[in-house]
Image 1 (cartoon, rainbow, N blue to C red):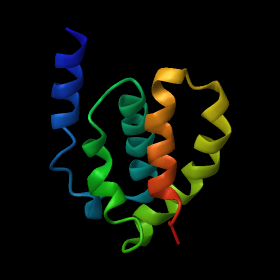
Image 2: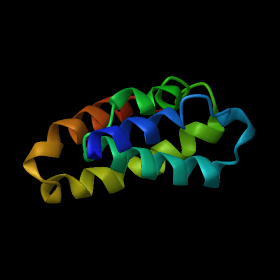
Image 3: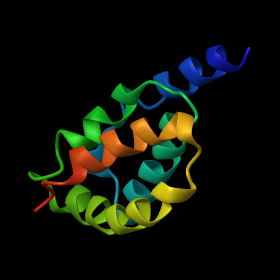
Length: 96
C-alpha cells in the first residue's frame, strides 16, 4: 500500500551524490523530500542534506531559502504532519 510506496521512494534518495548536483536540483529534491516526510515518509531521507547544511554552500543556500517558506506553511499543515514540519524547521534553525 501507501507506506510501501513511501519506503521505496525514500530508498531511491539514499545514495544520491548531492555534491555533484547544482543548487537548483538540490532545492527541487529538498522540496520533494519535505513533502514525503510530511505525508509520513522516513525523516532520515533528509539526513544526507541536513548533515551537510553548514559545510556545503550548494546545499546551504537552498535550505536557507526553504526555511521561511516552510515557516509560513506551518499554520496550514494538517495537525498530523506539524510535528514533522517542526522537526525540519528545528534542524534548519542553525543554517548559517
